[in-house]
Length: 321
Image 1: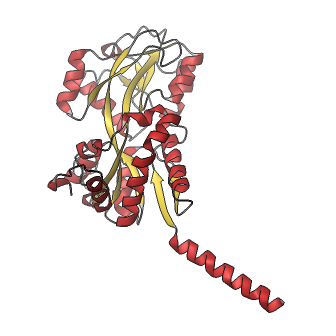
Image 2: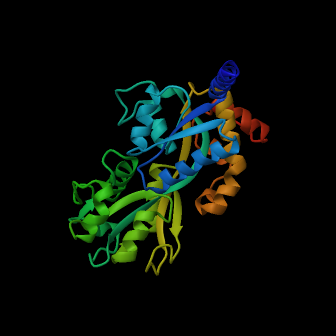
Image 3: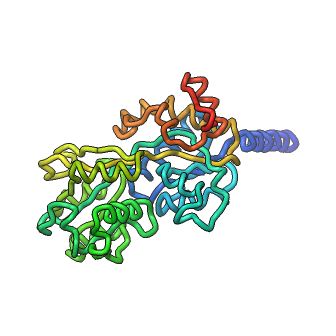
């Protein structure tokens, strides 16, 4: 009897080893915990697991933002998937700041497109600030230190000629909400899908104002970065928001590197698009993406992703293969 039980145990052990070998592990890296992009990434990881009955398992890692994500790409092995605006990836591949002295970014490849970033410029309701130009001389958090949002905000301030006049507060973005409540700062910038949870929570307890850009300001931003588009935040998106807010948005891609297994890249891309309508029923932001948008990112696709888009009838230009 003991020999029989031992044989069963051996068979079970071999089965577990076989299952472990068949399992594909993927690392997903997006944004800080509590952000909408982190929540999207958690949802994406669960979708991969459920769609494959556990054959694909995802580890979700918190990140300080897109700059960190891109910087990690050259040194992360295997099935590493991260999010970033395409402009930042192109800057890395071209050796522009903040990646000028670094290498290895030529291996980055596109898988699919994520819901776009909406730039929010939030000020206290009693601050007397009604437009971006009036931020001159005021205390403002431009975004998390070293993040894409901070770079985008400072680029906007330079375009408006107020970059040397705004008092950039030495406060991390995750502390900006409390700093606003405590009147330590006049406002902050955050880049996320809308509605974004921390702005919702702040607006529910504190009088705030979301600043709009003028049509001329929007055109200046688009001229500097053609991937930018106008975004309108409808009234009622946030508590006590009675007027529409006109701002701008930027595309976001899900990327990997040439070190990702081709079959894994194909399956992750295929599952994402097959489950996107289902995810949109749970969170509307997923409804803002379509497969053809991945081509518009302008970053070469992973061979596994090329295979999926070709099967889906989407032409992939030769320069993106």
